[in-house]
Length: 300
View 1 (tube, rainbow, N blue to C red):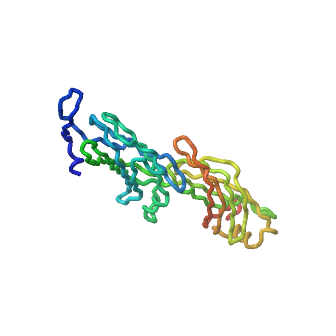
View 2: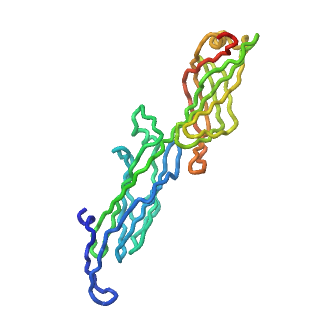
View 3: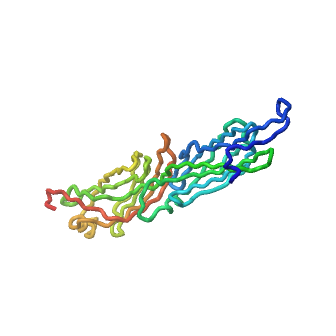
């Protein structure tokens, strides 16, 4: 590394344009990470495109030898790799040489599995983003003396943690106790825990209480769920006293809460940089407790 830290190296070359020997100053290349952008996003992976700029201030070309990168968050590395002269299967091709007195741009796509990011967090950590640092080491060869030098750069950013929206039942709101039937609404809740918006469509459900299916069906419309927001959907229902059974009637008439099981499927789209990624078909299931709300006029 001592060689790479030299500010300048005087190399004596013969055969310059004037025909006389003259010293030519070699300065090591300068490398910067120009930008880090989220290029792809799903509930399984996060794609990052790192744009790296290399400036070769020397009057002769430098041979590109390779580039090593590593990505870490809060001291824990979760991604690393090497790119050779011809690139790799997941990276674009890289230049064979760094042109004299010129700037060369390298665009490197990186793929991170979402589960690898979540594994960095503790069990009670519900953050929707985590900080990260990308470090790159670029190796070049000085052709006239066949010496290898390495220059380094790094840049910090934040990675989103794509999380599936939380789907559940908030409450059961009874609107009427008739002579023959009970009328009520099941209030579904959908919460977006992400820093990006979601589109929700083709939501299918099966709602059960005490292992007994109460209702199943779906919502045909697609709606947008802003970052960090919750959407409530009311599903009107009614039960006949004669066909519902004593257990169901007792729960709705006498209990304050009910234990439920909810399962189904949904198509989720991710809204990223004014475009929608997906939709991604997802299965879900949830056990929970819902509050039973009764009308005041019945004194309950």
